[in-house]
Image (cartoon, rainbow, N blue to C red; front, side, top):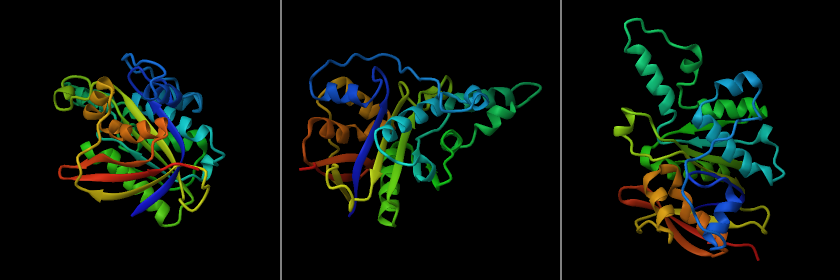
Length: 264
């Protein structure tokens, strides 16, 4: 069984600007109104890198920054896991379009943004981070795979790990193969379960239970259609202060059984 303390949360998505807003929606203190995701300019980046940053970079940096903002964590030495089901579809489309012309010329900026770990690279530039960074992709299982990786690093001795899960809709014709409706990002700052007993604690193991569903239909649609949003049932429990068990999507016949314990 893997375990961790939840020290910080970051969220950005359709009609969602941050974690406090989503938490208020889950508690029934305000309604949810869907709208296109607004991606803020990554002000933490130097001007040159800020101009080169694409949508997924803006998304990943925004939720990662929110998750670490309220915690006294040195981002320069903070290990992290960046997980995305498909990476930067916009950049991939532009590269393919250029290669399909009679005179294929590739932009150096687009070329260096084409690797799957581009967002994590921008994070290391923004925060001067020299700690290990893992970038992974497991398609629909990407959130679960990222969560397992982050908890495994804690089990191997890391004091804290930042998990950043992010996905964005692709332009046509790539969109026909991936029906992600909009950009969504979720970040968790996870710490060793042996520290800070006043923080929520999660325990995780593989199971075969049915994935937990969200009560609000529009948010449940996000959970089902965007891989990075598979962690929303966990955030719903956190927002409502509800302990107990829930199940998160992972593989076709395997789910992640999560037991959530709240601080006394």
